[in-house]
Image (cartoon, rainbow, N blue to C red; front, side, top):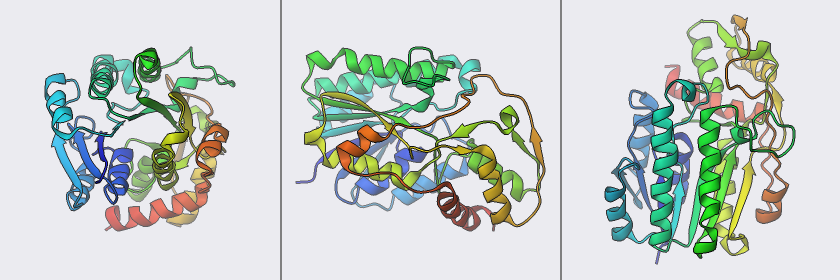
Length: 315
């Protein structure tokens, strides 16, 4: 009998790819309320692709509505719950904190508490590299954005119930995940669209940022292997999900120069509120657990993204 998995935020970037992958071997129920990308064409493309999957069922539900969620939990009796539903984005969290609180904290608690109540065996949730702030060490007690604070709250809430449940809990700190069907608001996608339209691209912090750019296939493969290695998991643990190597922002720009084969304008501007200067995942614990080392280089990953971009957005 197929195990049943709930994936919240299934219409989002990572949620879409994970739903697409897991529904090949599991019965997957995806829920989303399309709140973050309501007007985005990419959401429609993701949803249409998932609708063709035989073992995937979609339900439009707001995770802040606990009563509706409870009915779904009772009906399906999930073995695994993966909570990826959240409002992303650092800068916007300063201006619209209420919506972040409602979805990222209240919504998270609803999913988590129902998972405990319904005796789910494994709970996986999406955290963020943003929890590290500008710390050079693995220090997460000083978030520099409200978005990061909501993710840190998730980690604290999840840990606070460990003594009262037999459910295994894993928090995944994602590091700048990119790839086909990606988020239009992220630099890799945004830059490509601007270059295609012959518009200048804005480089924050005068181009001095470095990022651990993590290709989506590596990210999904890591989560799949975590599920397969469920017996090796501790009752509670946090894992960095990244490449383990950071690249300069201008490395990305140089790759785009080769891919687009045309000149484009660059405007260097000051650092924006809440921006983290550098990110780099510590993937030793992940490798030890699942014996997999994410290794897609930025050049190779952008090459795959560019092929997809040309097919869907350069017609």
